[in-house]
Length: 305
Ligand SMILES: Nc1ncnc2c1ncn2[C@@H]1O[C@H](COP(=O)(O)OP(=O)(O)OP(=O)(O)O)[C@@H](O)[C@H]1O
Image (cartoon, rainbow, N blue to C red; front, side, top):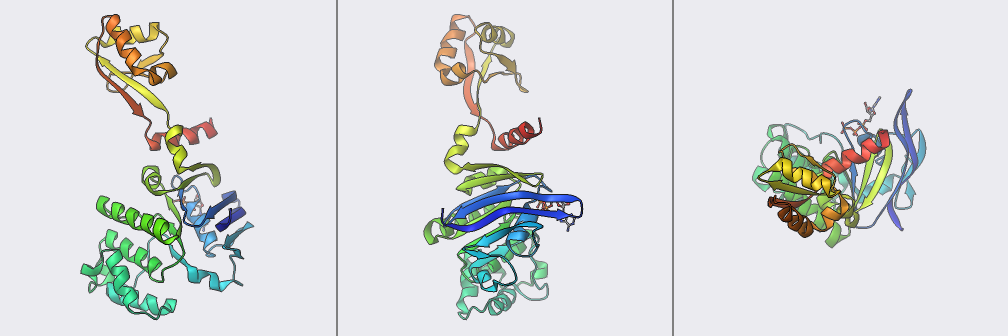
């Protein structure tokens, strides 16, 4: 892979505590890489190392072919970033904040401020002081700052923090447009797997400082376990019939009958016919897919088990 972002055996130790342990990953042009992990798993530390804000105890980070470090300052021209709560001058308006940032970034075209306010739906708040913004709009301002100089690479720590459901969808569509239509490479962290799964081309799971799994978008579906959920007027009898036939079943929290038996999952029609023949016709029969969050917890607990 001709990588745009690369981490090579990167670790970070804070005194005796190993916050990030030997992470290696590569991200190609136009990819959206979702970096997912529980609170305290090492996401922010990894992102800070990638952005040169924290020095790795071991290993190196690369943007393009250039090593992240004090010597290679020009790499930041092509990178937009958002880390933790975005900082803005509270007494300046949204427009003024973006204009200060535009000058700092050396962007000559002053219309870029209006463009980015439009992209982030901030135009209505252009004259509002940044200190008076809602959490969601402060986050939009942070993302606007990251996008202002039209970077080829976006490195974002929890970009959907504070956004309402509409905001999450808008930002998701914006990132998808940037990646698919403009070839922007995006590395974004989140603790919400379901959110990241909707947008990422690849997901990396970080747990206790280690990258424990990487999954491509087209593999997500096949990794999720499936179960057949059956209900009947006589639940006890239906459960007995299922187990007698070798489809190991249990009652779920709603009192329905649930099985992950492979044949049952693959042939629900046969199960329906079988239950009818046993005198317990199903009143409900559905194939359900594991929630992504549950999958995530399963991956983690397998590691710990
Ligand atoms: N400067 C520091 N000194 C000591 N320990 C630190 C420091 N920064 C982070 N840590 C610890 O390193 C671990 C990883 O923290 P990090 O902020 O990278 O996690 P995270 O996955 O981003 O979590 P969150 O989702 O809560 O932001 C945590 O246990 C944290 O307490």
